[in-house]
Image 1 (cartoon, rainbow, N blue to C red):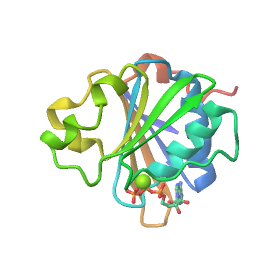
Image 2 (cartoon, rainbow, N blue to C red; image 1 turned 90 degrees about the vertical axis):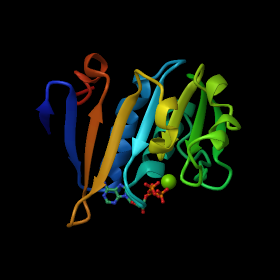
Image 3 (cartoon, protein in one colour; image 1 turned 30 degrees about the horizontal axis):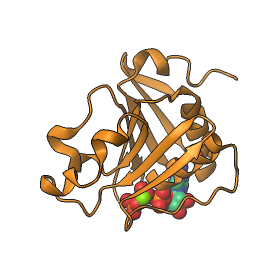
Length: 157
Ligand SMILES: Nc1ncnc2c1ncn2[C@@H]1O[C@H](COP(=O)(O)OP(=O)(O)OP(=O)(O)O)[C@@H](O)[C@H]1O
Ligand SMILES: [Mg+2]
């Protein structure tokens, strides 16, 4: 692990297990009103991250978490509050967005894949997680936006 700047945390995720372990570290940080923006190219691991996070929050290691790429949003009642998982891949910025109930969702916990579609509707104060596939198949993760809450993220628990 290395910190690339005072506000961002960068780490290498060698395997899917590492992606899932990171999600389980982030899960306990979340509370009502929080948004996690999950960016990265097709197949970067955004849905895998969201699945592990939701399973942890629900306390159910086999919870069914389908990718919301067609339904656009799937909502979950977890032990730690309602979580809305969006995939905005097919959304055009503009009127489409207003039909997604985002304003109400933002009062709960929201996980958003393809957050670039939000444009000016991007909520301030979100945790931004970018996943980047490396040439060798590993992933690079960059977490930004919550310097205080991220400070102790990778300490032994
Ligand atoms: N750290 C990692 N190293 C190697 N493979 C990984 C890692 N994290 C996730 N993967 C793999 O990446 C693949 C794609 O994951 P996923 O479907 O979550 O991507 P996505 O970013 O949601 O893609 P899309 O934009 O198409 O929805 C999965 O097969 C998953 O096992
Ligand atoms: Mg996905």
